[in-house]
Image (cartoon, rainbow, N blue to C red; front, side):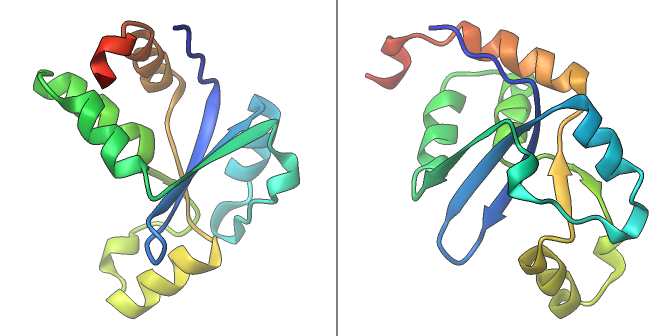
Length: 132
C-alpha cells in the first residue's frame, strides 16, 4: 500500500466527530501563512480532501497499536496537527472564544513538510495485517 501525503491542513468537527484532511499546494499554504490573524481557508483551493466521518479515532487507535512513542506521536499528528495558522496564543483565550475560533474555521491546523515526510514513511510501512 502506498500512501502519499503532500501539504495538508486538518479540521476536526467536535460535534460530529469527523476529521477532514485537505491536500493543498505549497503556493496556497504560503498565501494562507501570509494572511496573519485574518486566515480563512476556502475548500475550493484544495487539490483534494478526505473526510473521516465517525472513524478517525478508530483509525488512529489501530495505527497506534504496538507502536513506540514517536510513531504514536506521528499518527496522532495526522488528525491533530499541533501547528496553527491564524490567531497566536489561542490557549490563552477563554474556552468560549477558542471554541468560536475553531468552529468558524479561523484556525487552521497543519503539519510541516518534515513531519509529513515522516508520516508518509510510517504509513508506507502499514499493511493490511495492521487492520486485521
